Image 1: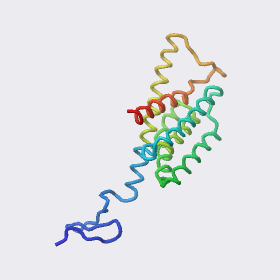
Image 2: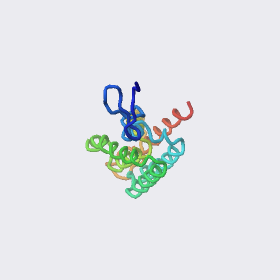
Image 3: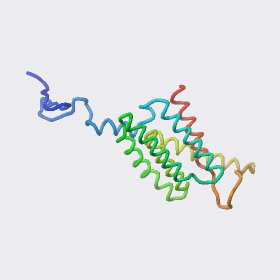
Image 4: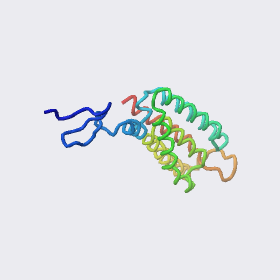
Length: 188
């Protein structure tokens, strides 16, 4: 007596009569959901990371010079990474990661921990690398910014300010955190 009977492509009926998926997961959502959360960058190799590091370098340059990350830069980055992931078959995961990252990092944005350009950059990072790597990179960047801020107050080191109320250029710390994360993942 067979234990499982094929019903449709990808589904089986077990001995109790419940329909399961043959891959052991929840089907398509399981695949792109895991990919969106645990790393689009890990699934597609070092090239996505290198492209994101170039994007972060340009964003950091703007953030140092103008204390803002232009909307056009974030839009170009988003379109680039979405097209990249659609071409590699993970477009749904990239869009899901973009939306989840935006929702999760909306609270720190509303609390004023960083500006809206930084929040948009975080969503581009989510679309490029996935939700959890993005969250790790951004929280690591905030920790680095706090360490720098404390050291700067103690030793009177400051960024050149363009206006009196300009804060720290968060994109610089994101670039340092992303480089560190990339090095740990791909070198070790």
